[in-house]
Structure formats: C-alpha cells, structure tokens
Image (cartoon, rainbow, N blue to C red; front, side, top):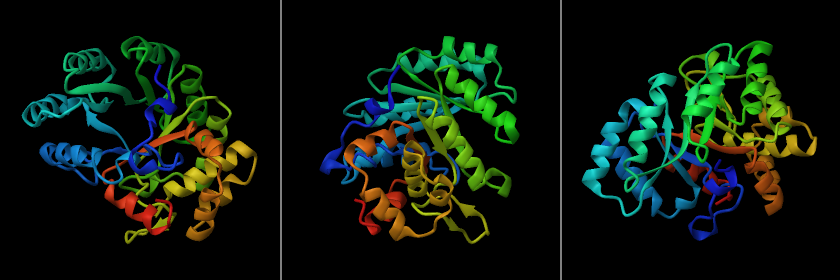
Length: 287
C-alpha cells in the first residue's frame, strides 16, 4: 500500500516537510461546490503554481467520475491527476469506479479511496473494503463519530490497515468535534502505527469562531497537537489554543525528522481552496 511519505514528495521551492502535500483539493465539495471545469482548471494551475508543493490529491466523488474524465479529455493534462476517489455510491460501487479510473491511466492515477463506514464498522464490511480497493491504493474509512463506540470503530479501521478519517466540521454544530474528542482520536491514532486524514471545517490555520458562531479547529493546531501526541505532551492545550504566534513558533521549532513523524500520522486534509490555507501560512511566516 502507498504510504503517507510517498504522497508527500517534495514540492517546488523546497516546501517545508511539515507542509508538503498537506492540502488535498476538495474544490468540488461544500462549501466550494466548484463546477468541474473550474475545479480541474484550478487544480492543474495549482500543480504548477508557486506553492504546488503544498497541494496534495484531487478529490472526486465516484458519482462525478464520468464528468471528471470528460473534462480531462478536453484539457489533456501533461501528466495524470493524482486522485482520491470519494465513494458516495455505496460500497458495492467501488469495483466499477476503480476499474473506470484504472482504464484511464493516461488521465488519472488512483492514490486513495475514501468512504464513510456503517455505524457498527463491522469486520465483514472492512474485509470487503480490502477486497475492493487495490493493495497499492490507500483506503480511508470514516467511522461515525459519537461516544466510545466511535473510538472502537477507529481502532477497528486501524487494525484492518486502513486510515481513519476525522471530520472536523460541517453545516451544523454537531459536525464539529470537541477538543476532547479530537484529543482522544489523536491518542488512538498516534499509538496505532497508521496515518489519518482530516476533512471539513479546517478553513484556517488557527482555531477561530466564524460569523455563524461555529468554532473551527485549525489545521496548524492539529499539526502541533499531533507533534505533542508523539512526544507525550499536552495535546488538548494545542488543540484549544488561539495563540497563532505560539503555535507558529512551536511548528517552526520542529526538526525535519519530527516534522516527517508528524506527517506520518496527520497525512493530509481536504480543503475547497488552496489559496486560503496558503495565505494563512504565508501570513504566519511558515511559507
């Protein structure tokens, strides 16, 4: 299976290892909801842009795969787009979707398959995921959050060799996990010997409250918290912090070896914009 390290090949301008390939392109997903032509154009421009090294995979729902291929045939990319296929058509649709991607290897390179888990995350379902997704493709499974059962589901995903996904926000307050829940998740994952992926809600580098009153986790908070989880320090303090200067200083103090270790756990997160996180990182002096 591909690893988090392989997905983080160095980018242009010597992107810091803590940030290499951190931001997966989720332009097709809310709140961005880009059209397919705009999403593809934006991704191809980002691949050769100033901060291409920060950009990771292109995320596409399985239900829009034909639309993506049609657009790529029009634009004829110089090299295949590194793809994460997000399964929104049910587990039974995975083999066909994977087959379609693999038949278009001049346009698409399948790196990851992501899907929500059933509420009980049972072993039979996880076995089918393993059967349907090729061995050299990363499997990402999102257990439904809530209560101790959620963390049990996270453990089963890890034991099965898949990456768990952490949803950090959404359209209602219930979609935003608490600091305690994220801390518990990091405790399970950092001791599990596998990476995780985050999604939704991480619109800015540092924890903040938006105009709707929702308090968002920051992706820089999550990076620093992951570093602390690996060194036995206070994870929840890092997750709850709104001190951009202190978080930046702590991130900058990480050695390259420590940064690689962090990203071996926190592999990437999906964002509907590359410009927004890059602007935050530049403003903080991290890029």
